[in-house]
Length: 465
Length: 139
Image 1 (tube, helix red, strand yellow):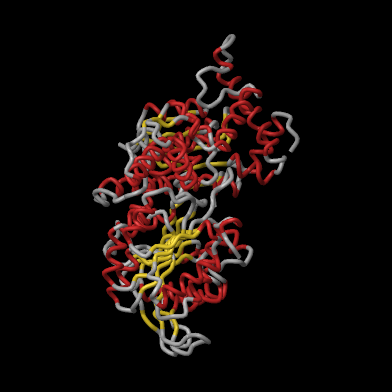
Image 2 (tube, rainbow over the protein chains, first blue to last red; image 1 turned 120 degrees about the horizontal axis):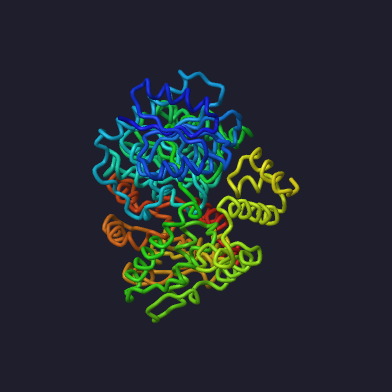
């Protein structure tokens, strides 16, 4: 019998929803606070969680990843009385199944529940790929696994795929993995680096051209779209595609037909499209810098490549993987790692993501030379300086360093957990305020909080907004 | 581009026979775009492979001229060493088999040796403009 957890501080809502869940033949459990709900989700394998956003002891959205990490890896349906576009977006990006604004009919709630349970049932019986080929994709964090789950689903279909992620997060690896796990594996995987193509050449490179189509076109050339026939076309940095070319490309995506430059005949082509970007295409579309209709076409499947700071538990495995790979390449003995080396890596923010981590490993290896073990001393000075500064700031502000064995909790009487959390929250917000220069937009971006929630918290702690 | 703390330079590795017409043209392009200390020229795959087994710096660019399918296949045999490179590949002919081998290398740009190769100069310039540092680009 499917188990459903209802996490809402409103007793009437809890009772009404529990009745609906029970009538549908499922087993409901109720919690009224976040900590109570998280405890239940850690102990019991739930299939679905109904999660209120504003709870007495915290924000439900912030607990979403922890709930999803529970033993049942439940689908989470957000229920909120406060419509908040930023919150809805954050919820979906964090893997929520649905976002329902109260007041809403019980019919709407039960429909969302049924759909989520149907999805889980199909996911369980669906054979899927026996083993996902993921060469080069390293890690086992929740965020990476979410991306791989979507990748596995996308690879079994012919739909277009959009991969979004910051620079250095490995979007091309994900794209190749979609291709390698798809029925088109073994056929061509044609890369179009939109950021590297000069605007004047994009059209002829993509669509090809006839002899004499323009000055210098002394012979006919086949375009990359045609070269991808039967295989996969990967448009990297698709946000850089010039607007006039987007229009022609949209037709190629919709009709799988296009006209080479200077030609009077159309060519039919069979390709699977994967696109990647580090830009906010939704915003670009709103600002008229990217065609909305093309965006909608591109994202039949959507994969978010998570930044390294959101999958810190993968840092160690990634570092070991890359150092071993480099040692093999250079023909040198494999290196050992001191615990402090990993600790230093874990304290850094990695704004350049996995690419930056890999470059850093290469520099550390060069600095170590023949020495058998890597120590923080081998890391680039600038990185060590950042880590040292960050540690000192943590201590100055009374916050424990993330991996420090000692801290304020080691001295004096223990505060209540609630008081400790309140204090940590206040100090976090103070630091956020200073580091972002009090920019509201930056504070929201860095913290992942919605504007509404951020203002609430700033007000609560007496910090000027 | 590396973020967070100061980055390195962009190295450009050119693999091409200097006697080949397209090889000469590629050499001129690299000479025009890249400063002396950040460009390296190779005429044998063995020497190129030896170089690839040493640190390359950040986001290096490899410009490779493959004169025939055999040469492409040899490059493919060391593709694990090419994984960190942004490859610009110049192929000799327009045959389907050649193109299939070319795309198996996952180059960032493919073109043909029978053209004027101005496109290679433009693509390289754009790649270096986006990812290179001033001291690595001599333009």
